[in-house]
Image (cartoon, rainbow, N blue to C red; front, side, top):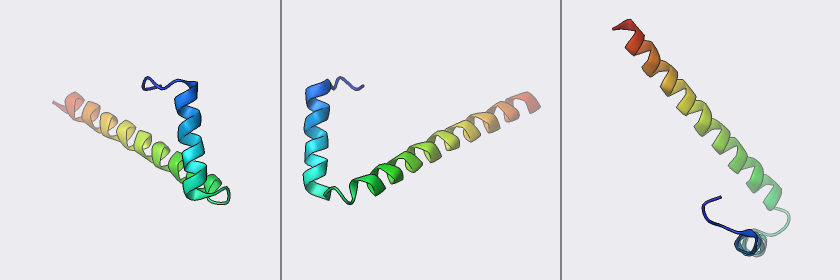
Length: 57
C-alpha cells in the first residue's frame, strides 16, 4: 500500500478526523469510493476501445 505501514495509516486517519470532523468522514469516504470506481470504469472503457480499434485494422 504505497510503502505505508499501520502507524502511518493511523496518523493519516487521525489527521483526516481532525480536519474534517466525524460528521463529514462518511460522505468523504463515499465520494472517494465513487471517484475511484469511476476512474476504473473509464480505464476499462478506454482499453476496450483500443482493443476494438486494433481488431478493426
